[in-house]
Image (cartoon, rainbow over all chains, first blue to last red; front, side, top):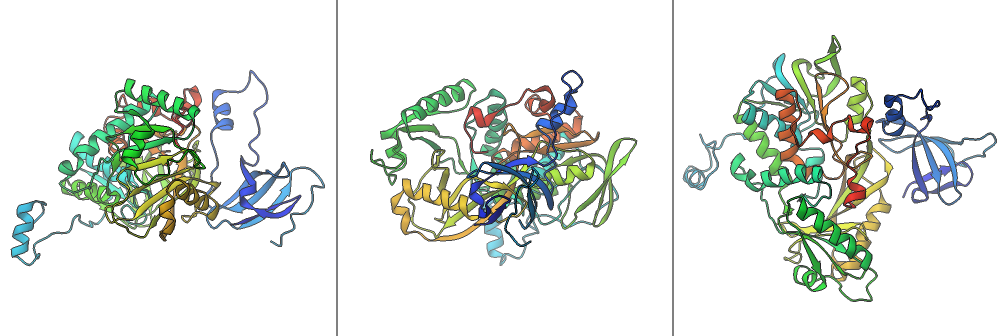
Length: 94
Length: 417
């Protein structure tokens, strides 16, 4: 069982977390101006990197959404941080 | 000099102290240029090369593999073959594969140990029984074999299962596909490799792609750890590394990579004569010819390229199996491993030309690539040889994500990928 760091609750079991996709995948703005390609990229295409990744995760037990940098090959977590200002400390030494 | 496997060859070599057997495939030096280059020496890549040579008479082909043949997902799956899908497009695809599997041993002159022992997908509630009836109807309409089983039918094929109404997951019945079964996964890769090699295909191992050669907006080949290889058309068949190579080619795919785990128990005498799958407990199992129980389940919940998997899902899978088969509790697990699978938003594969012209894709099979190997190879060979879609592969083009015409098998048949 791996521990993931929630910025609000500290290190918790991985089974408490839900993967939310790439960080920075912004919904394209402008109803009429959004092309099929932009919409496809937003909805379906993924960076899915092999190595360092920058991702959005949700801690299901506290319901908070946060950003986590981790490596997808050996699963080491570099850091995790709240998406809002003053969101707390993840409590892990990185 | 014995190249063809037969009872006579076995007898002859028996008299000859087994000295005349040849290597199953050559290890040739790469040429600087091929008509068609295939990246990925797994089942799908090797099958593509074989069908290019056999069906389209194109012999100047190379398959390059960064590791060794069948060392990725082909050697890591749980060997189940089946075509119990919901949508007509999917049934056409997987039924094509199952039909090819039925004659593959003869076709390749290689024993793939196909065993059509049937698969039972269990239903654990009245509601699940209704869904099972819907699935059976869909499968029959789509032209594959399916039967709706009640509890007594289940007792007949699974004598050791706990059918008590007080069970944690009481069994109400299930979907039976009698032509499903298992095949020896390594033999499928090796059989295709040997047959493709005999038709003149160059198989080059320990050869990793470093970058794509793009000229005039088209893919013209690759630069590898062993130097440049140029080709008119390139096929990319690298499940578990699809996004990674796509990034090198300059585009993104609708794929997230997850580890999918499997494990085997110690070998026991014959106890399970079919493939059993329980979506509710998230587990499936069959017994190998050696007697081991081969156990698998759902995806890990953490996107990963680490080919090991992690504990929470394994615990869930094993506990689900033991809940249904209490007598398996005394078994010890011998091995556990994981493969990295390409998960698409609609749980269906991607077959077709990539955003980089000249580069063709066969990826996104999720947890179900092994069962599709003969079809994946046939269809990618058709694409590479003609530049056009086969009727069966057309619905699976990458364009479907832009058109919105998804083939959502996770919603349709409730499969675990």
